[in-house]
Length: 324
Image (cartoon, rainbow, N blue to C red):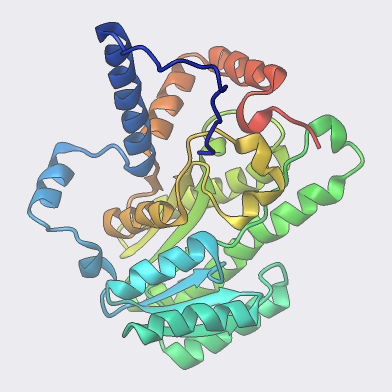
């Protein structure tokens, strides 16, 4: 936080009274609760007991297994690659930027991990088909696919009336790309009767998100693919998971950084922790506790949720406040 200079004539601040200290403590507790609620999902008693005894560690889930991670050249993808490699996974890193991929691979191998780079434009169907064939030929198998690569567009619907291509671009990378890659790798997973596909989604598919309609719609489509396919795959050894991330501080939000100022958010490392939870839990839906609670509230009163999000937009609060 930037420092604030004091007026030359200001006197020493008077000691805070018990009421001020109590309010400060309450605000600190609330802030800590929000941060913890963003970092961790709600867990049941059985999961809590297993966690106490270390029975569901990430190493048990990914150690010695081949994990493909898209969008791995920076941000959440890079943090996830480092976390999984540290847990003993052989990480296969996919992104467009070859030099950045090489940097991430170098960092992992220097610390004793196993990593391989596969540059690819994941909005190109033919490139995805070639990538799938090459990965299976060279790696032999893929145990986990993390579809993390994505495109975000922040623009109000009234400013998008002549911009249908915004919807096409987000669908190409956020939906068609992950689906094409998943369909390409699923046959090998089914043949080995083991595998997992982790699709990175957003909290905004659970609650209204004004000015992100194109982005959210593409992620909602991916959610529907994930949940439906997960149900079909029950009993096959194949799991599909959607991870509903909150705001994460990555280069993707840079164009709208000012609008996010003051909003609770996660670091890329913390977001990777939620993706690790998905690898461990293998459930169809993984999200921070606060997102789950918000979704429950929305189920009771969707009108109330709409009013809250609409009011935030009108007063310029948070990520829905300012138009391009």
